[in-house]
View 1 (spheres, helix red, strand yellow):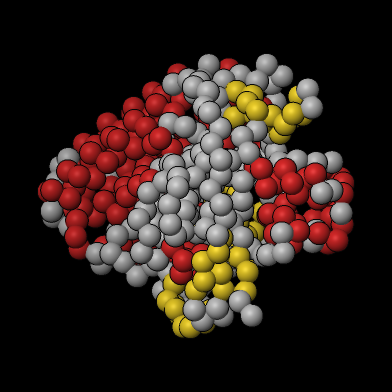
View 2: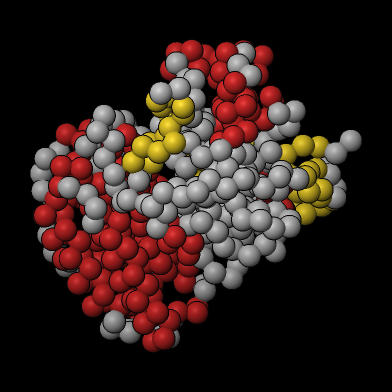
Length: 434
Ligand SMILES: [Fe+2]
């Protein structure tokens, strides 16, 4: 294996020649691959193929693309004489934009009626059989590809979240408001009172330094100086956001960033994405259908622009990602993740200290998605999975109700454009201490 990224991963010798580690990775492979398919069980075959916008992909494409990853980066590398199920799949389901080859245009993924959904499931099974056979050889070769299999599983978990957010966008276009998975009605609870937690100024370290898996964008660990700051004890609720709306929040240009104010009138934003006024009351489309907005739940499906405008209206600001990571230090990694089966943010539990830092909603930060100081991109064939930074996207932290808990860690950096609203994105307020 000459790939520098692989070589770097191999410096972690934990899995090399360790049958227990390889067996654990095989088990995890089965679990993650199975979970992807479980997320698709509620879908009708017609649901799999629709693409509603260039940034969202059809479910069928996600299912094939995550499989293409294992085929290309594991099987083709391990077996020089590997025989693909269909040579054309490399073109259709490749997400590389580099020299590895042409790709089917992202915005045209919804124009493909073939391969059929059934054929894509057969493709998954074809690749699964061979990856598992390779892993279960317990050979030096299987140990060498183990770090790439692990990366592929994290990649698949990212796409699991996108399967949920993209299918929500598909179902939301339909005036029948189809239910993905039903959820029992709940009594609305009172939201916990918002309190402020102070953090002392000082030099901190942020970023990943091991052990365990992390993406390249979380490294290197480095120092930052933080002025003293305060962070809200929980995310902003729907009830608080309704007060912003009632105070003319969407009609007051002084609350919005200049570029945001070009978007708000153009897109006619008056409420978060998926909100509908029915009979004078706000409802939101959820994966359990159209439901009345619960004032105690964290507000979600808001853009960075809306999060920033809300914070300004509330006399606060959004945290930087270093502040967020500093505040998350030492907190238990638990929360309303995809495993809860709720697929929607929940009103927070009572408790002291910082609440709901993990799960429920991704929290917008004010930090641009740029490399950390000292970051060096290693050349190699991992394409979009390394060195993929943006000049116009913001970092979000903490995971959501559509994220797998085993995919999350304190240093995880998600990123989306400022106007994106179809992820489960929400708001946590910060403010300086004078
Ligand atoms: Fe991908």
